[in-house]
Image 1 (cartoon, rainbow, N blue to C red):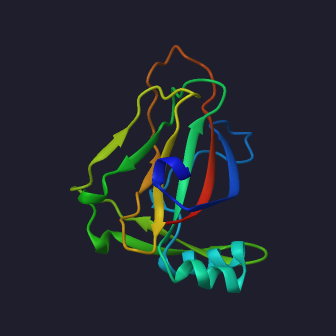
Image 2 (cartoon, helix red, strand yellow; image 1 turned 120 degrees about the vertical axis):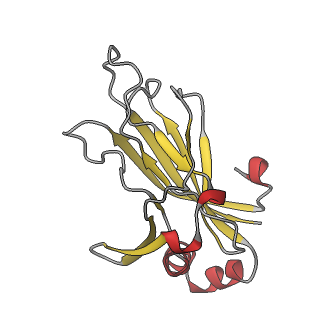
Length: 171
C-alpha cells in the first residue's frame, strides 16, 4: 500500500471475508455505499489510533483505503462494482448510521442516479487486487461500490468468496 499510494504510514485495521452463500456469516454487500462519512471517519481514526495520534494524523493528509480481492476462485457471481466518482453528484450521497454494540459508525449510501457510470473487473482472480478510496480528508472523492447482481457463466458453480481489508494511510 505504501508503494502504490506513496503513503508514509499504513495501518491495516479490519478484515472481512464475504461469501455469496445463504449460510455465510458475511455475504457480499449489495447496497451502494462508501465506508465512511466525514463524521464516521473522524470517529474511526480515534478508535484506531487514540485521541493524540488521531489528532496528529488529522492535522495532515490521511485516507481510508479498501483493499479487496477474491479468495480461492475467480469471481463468477456478484462481482464488486464501482461507480465512477466523476459521475456522482454531491447530493447523491446519503449519511447512514451504523449501530454496533460498542459504537456508532456512519457510512455514505449512494442514491441511484441515471448519470452514474459503473465499472467492474470481469472474472477477477485471487492474484488480482483492487484498492479504492473510501474516505480522504483532503477531499479526494470516495468510490461508491457494491456487489453486482450478475452471474457471468451459469455453468460455473464455485461460490463467490472475497476478502476486504480496510487500511488507514497517512501521506
